[in-house]
Amino acid sequence: MNEPADLVVVGAGPAGLAATATALSGGLRVVLVDSGTTVGGQYWRHPPEHARAAIATGDLHHGLRTYRALCRALAAHRAAGRLDLLLGHHAWSAVREGDGFAVHAVDRRDAPRETTVVLRAPRLLVATGAYDRQLPFPGWDLPGVLTAGGLQALLKGGGVAAGSRVALGGTGPFLLPVAAGLAARGVEVVAVCEAAHPRAWLRHPVPLLRNPGKWAEGAGYAATLARHRVPVRPRTAIVAAEGGARVSAVRIASLAPDGSPRPGTERRVEVDAVGVGWGFTPQLDLLVPLGCALTESADGNAVAAVDADQRTTVPGLYTAGETCGVGGAALAVNEGRLAARSVLADSGTDPAPANRPPTALRSAVARQRAFARAMALAHPVPPAWPEWLTDGTVVCRCEEVTAGAVRAARADGAHDHRQVKQLTRAGMGWCQGRMCGPAVHCLTARGRAYEPAERLVATPVTLGALADLDEGPQTPQTPQSPRAAQSPRAAQAQQAPTDNGHTDKECS
Ligand SMILES: Cc1cc2nc3c(=O)[nH]c(=O)nc-3n(C[C@H](O)[C@H](O)[C@H](O)COP(=O)(O)OP(=O)(O)OC[C@H]3O[C@@H](n4cnc5c(N)ncnc54)[C@H](O)[C@@H]3O)c2cc1C
Image 1 (cartoon, rainbow, N blue to C red):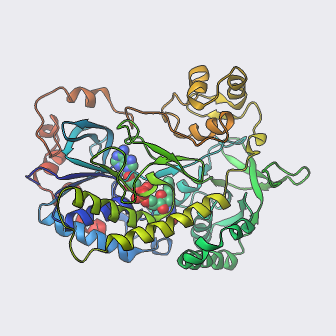
Image 2 (spheres, rainbow, N blue to C red):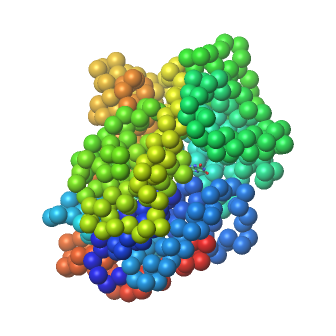
């Protein structure tokens, strides 16, 4: 793309793809950045192009027609030179610059070498999704214990089942597709331990009735699980994992309504892999330092505060998808479209007439958000969960901080994860609290929403890449790197928007 971009979109998941396609259809020039090697985000994660023919993942996907239509739209605009698609680029910072934004990213396609790029545009749309919310328990750091999302990512991204005898635990409907995908590949899923009780859904009849598609999807998973005789156990939890070099068994207990294990119900089940998921935590790293206001969502997370059309509280900054609260891919797509319509309106441009009108999008978003809220209320983190932890259970894996140390910090007056970090180093390691932050928060500041710490650098960046920033002038919109001349692929990326390491076929 030779002209300045009108919009930078970070994240090529359902929200970012839909936003990009809508913005392009209105005539904007867009740079779309994603740290992954293919577009699609978590929901439409696919194996790399060279392996797709050999790995069957079709049964794991829904909404592929929408995905393919979005990919076709992007491919056409790329060919026309209106879209720069930068895969393998991780945005580590976004800052205000003049009337617009500068997004700093590292190009990791030539890893381990990293090169910096700066992307500038008057408007920025952040669609960075979410990551698995984890609650520690004894043994959760054993090899073979994964997040539920991690198990799903291995399946969708590589056709890999992490074990042959797997236990799943946590809460929320997401456990069902993971179990169904594994069972359909011959994995023995010994139990799906759901901490909540399905009766909790009955308290939210209206969102249930207004989202029949969700029930159809749930019924499909239930049929697969029944066919493979996978037991789904409500009000139970994996309260410990055991093993040596890797996990060899889990302890499963029935839960009282507050989530405390019922005495005498614990049993040991042999497994070779475990998947645990307690919902997701929105990925707000780029939004928080820009001053975007947050609000509380029903699942106990802080999420980006947006108006009815996905504008954040920062002028020129928009966000869509799971940064606004966890609610699934269909909602993310609608929010992405709505956000892009706002970008178009604020740029004085009309969207293409074929696009869905904003009133229809707003009403779909409201309906799907109501369902997401019901889901969060029906699948809460059990209040008594900390009872599962011994003082020796590691909570922060990077810095090896135990539950005992966190409790001692709380006894010393720490009342949120930031203060615990100052006293114990929990959250100070490589992942910067992404894994342990929600758990430390639950252990110290219950009753308040979890707000992630402000991270000025959203991903670890090499000093060499940072040093690049001081070298040489950088032109406004296109990715610029002083090292580009040394890297044939990076040079290619700048010259030819249709050949920057991602073929159009990868979208199909
Ligand atoms: C591991 C995992 C697996 C999941 N699997 C499923 C599933 O199988 N089925 C289901 O219904 N839901 C799944 N979900 C929930 C899923 O996130 C949503 O339903 C849906 O994908 C949300 O769409 P989104 O566009 O908001 O975010 P995402 O799909 O998460 O897309 C966000 C994109 O932003 C990119 N990104 C994030 N930060 C940066 C950055 N700083 N720089 C550059 N790129 C960045 C990511 O690489 C990603 O491609 C999963 C979630 C996780 C965390």
